[in-house]
Amino acid sequence: MTLDDDVRSELASLEAEHRLRTPRIIDGPQGPTVILDGVEVVNLSSNDYLSLAGDPRLARAAHGALAEAGSGAGASRLIAGTQRWHVVLEQAMADWMRCGGVRLFNTGYAANVGVMTTLVRAGDLVISDELNHASIIDGCRLSKAEVVVVPHRDLVALEQALARAPGHPRALVVTESLFSMDGDIADLGAIAALCRRFGAALVVDEAHAIGAIGPEGRGLCAEAAVVPDVVIGTFGKALGSFGAFAATTQPIAELLWNRARPFVFSTALPPSVPASSLAAIEIVRGSEGLDRRRTLASHARRFRELVPRAGGARESAIAPIRIGDDREVMRLTAQLLEARVFVQGIRPPTVPEGTARLRVSFATGHTVQQIDNAAVLLNNAPRHVV
Image (cartoon, rainbow, N blue to C red):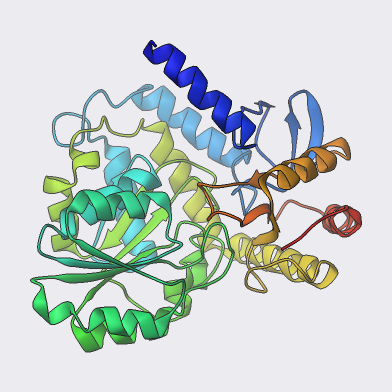
């Protein structure tokens, strides 16, 4: 059997398990409504929480940088790829996040892998929430540290795991703040207190909270008055641009420059990307950003009042509806698409076995009528919910 034959067999198995992914194509800008496979639909599946991905101000900023600095960085940041735009964005982020240093990464995945593999190594201890993102999981594995996975949001289990910290050169706790598939929130104050008690470092992935929650949109750590050793965030969700960052101290940012392999061995972001991110930060930090966050929270509260079985925190823009069965969740996605509402079914391995779900996500640009119509469709859909 050739490799191609073997791969075809693997794809057939995925299809039989109702887990084969196929692309859906969007024409035009991202937004609360999109042209999906040629049909206009209400988009309740994206992470464009503040409806900035299609904002012309971000596009104009990117266009200006293209005209000024060209389309590519041409090299890694450590060689000849550091453009003025990268430096200005890191400085703006440090000011916004109120920290000593910021390091840009090309993706959130690269940021998590880069941070974890830089800060811990063989002999160290990492404690990770069981529902952390795949990029955190892979970063933990690649670090070669001892990894203890604790049940989701279980503070007792975290405390028990941290009791092992004195036997390791370095101990680190890593968690998401707003969990991407469940829409619930970590108890950051309690986690930070346990880390202080046991002398452990704290890394928090704020990918789904940055821009959308907290004072000036600085996330749930800022809202809880918690200062982790590192905050990971992305520009590609609420900020409507692309790329990611680690907000931290100046020494840690310098170490990431020297040792974070996804950073060191990647061509830098094109100048147009940090330019659009800078435009987004200006919007998010101002009064318009506050208004957008208030609208987003209002949408989340309204939807949960109309659909009580929707999970997640009350004002979270992520509202999962657990279905359980892989085939059933994709049938419901197809049924909603027939009504021109796009809610993607999420299946393993993205979520644990037996927990397939409709992941409903909101954006500032949605209308109240669109939220209400989606609620009616979801309440009326025949279902076998676990």
